[in-house]
Length: 77
Image 1 (cartoon, one colour):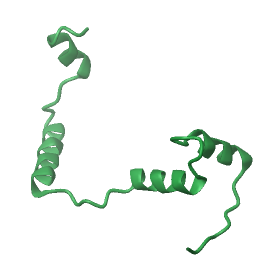
Image 2 (cartoon, helix red, strand yellow):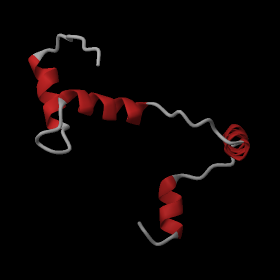
Image 3 (cartoon, helix red, strand yellow):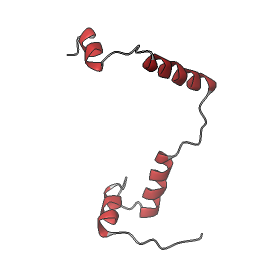
């Protein structure tokens, strides 16, 4: 395994420590988990892309509703 030293500010190290899933989790494992969360290696499906295009068209043409109006219709206000 290759290793590299990285300089971290104390406040950054403390934040990483606070993100541990369990006490003995290494900082390296925390960083790997954060990187996994920040990247998505699965491409969007054709259906997802089409859904996004439809949604953007709805927004561009004004076919939108305010969240508070939807909540009111559902009795959640």
